[in-house]
Length: 148
Image 1 (cartoon, rainbow, N blue to C red):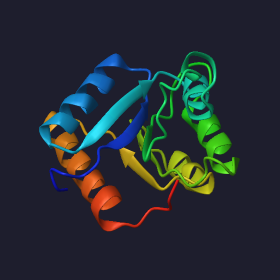
Image 2 (tube, one colour):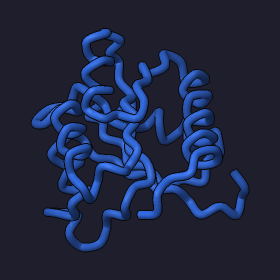
Image 3 (spheres, rainbow, N blue to C red):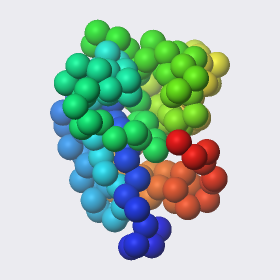
């Protein structure tokens, strides 16, 4: 990505504070022109996307990409993904499931629900940086996304 690129809004839904911090550090390390926002569960994710509750005052820019953990409290990633991909206003936002699960049943279910990719969370920070670089290159430099 060029330095003059407009920052891409990435919305990460993950209840683990350490994982959120690592993702933020990895994005900084790979110099993606991105604006990272966090939510901690599926309910908060949908509030953000629909600009409800604490996000109703214009503090929720539309994401160009969602990074979604599966196992979160209140509403998990599977339920949130189902709602996103059945909503005409939201279904075109790419959703990348980034989770600790490697279960075949989870992988199949997630793609059935409309996820764009399923990635098991890398174990090391260097691996996470590599994944973030690849995601940034693919989603923001290679593919053409629909206009919002």
